[in-house]
Amino acid sequence: MGLARARSVALLGVDGHTVEVEAHLGGGPAGLTLVGLPDTAVREARDRIRAAVVNSGESWPDDHITVSLSPASLPKRGSGFDLAIAAAVMGASGAVPVGTLHNAVFLAEVGLDGRTRPIAGVLPAVLAGARGGHSTFVVARGNATEARLVPDVEVLAVASLSELFARLRGELVDEPLFDDEEEPTAPRTGPRPDLADVLGQPVARRAVEIAAAGGHNLMLLGPPGTGKSLLAERLPTVLPPLSMAESIEVTAVHSVAGALPKGAPLITEPPFCAPHHTATRAAIVGGGSNRLRPGCVSLAHRGALFVDEAPEFGRGVLDSLRQPLETGEVIVARSAATVCFPARFLLVLAANPCPCGKPGSACTCSSLQRRRYLARLSGPLLDRVDLKVELQPVTRAELLADQAFAEASETVATRVSQARERSARRLSGTPWSTNAEIPGAELRRRFPVSEPALRPLGTAMERGEISARGVDRTLRVAWSLADLAGRSRPGADDTAYAFALWSGRAQ
Image (tube, rainbow, N blue to C red):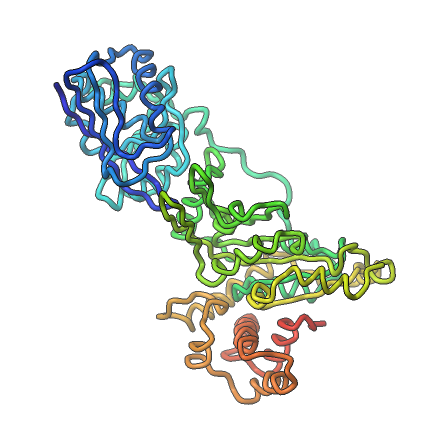
């Protein structure tokens, strides 16, 4: 009889938990029993691992094998436990030294021929193992680049069980520089999207800049062909680049979703996600029946979520955005587990003004049809949008006149970066990093504006054109305008223009 222990990691969302894999060989009929809340993929490992070990030239123990995955109350999902189970079984049989297993974390799927295969979620798994005090991780070669993003850990990439067992026995192994799955990807070719490509819409371009500077949500209303999609796609190009901590955070989410590019997995630019209007609620906010996966709001974390043709989305789908817009995270609760995904993103809504989408006199929709169409966007959702811009068809003369004034994304991004630096200095020592995140009460108490600056908003309140909550949102935009202009606090012009953007009347 023998007993051996190895370690792996179970993921719940983007949070990892170290799992101890124990293998015991004892009396009884030959076979392998798995205990510890394994799902179907983990239970199927019994047959995969036995075939992989035999095809690797090793002898499979002719005893009854019990494999325990603890803590037993934690659900175990996916094929990432294959390598740890194989190592523990071979350690219990005496085929490899037991002492070589204790300090390593094993993360890989195993094929029937003994080759290791990459798995999703390696980055958050390695991060969790490192937080648990482990420093050595064994992964498939296709996951090596991703695993090595975590500092101060040793990553051992193996191509097969034969290589793993040879290394555990201390034998010399010829290691190629990289596996085909780990070759660096070719650099992206072709021009990047540029804000200067959008001509004839100066107010909308300005709104994109303000949204990026202050983290404000944006709505673009206009007929087809006015540049709504072009503007939304260029918003990430003016956002500040991700810090290393933010890159790791974003990469971890995409790793769990299995959406990382091969060979160069670190995401350094703000992501952009544009779901189709037929997307389900689970696709937008996350979830699933067998495995809880991040949705579009999490894939857009630290970037932009573009909801094109917004009235065509299901109302329940759109309203599911309200909670992550407020909290910056999504909590997905199921009977088996509850997971939390990060979801701090800029929302860009785009809509036609009516069902037919035709401009001007070509439109045949009645005023009632227009109201009903836009009424599909609920008031509570629109209440979380700080900037609303109505786009009009552009004439040829406007296109030609605007060519000399349309600024490139690089120029706008510089101003946005400087504005964010000013707001960061002002918000130093607070839990907020952008103007859009400041609660209304704290905005009024910590960052009051002058009486002349408040006068345009007071007049609008007297006319019933804005609520107290709308005043708070307008003041946040006014602070972003002041940051972009390099002023220490907003003036009357800033609050007036912020109100025009909030109400959709900016010209």
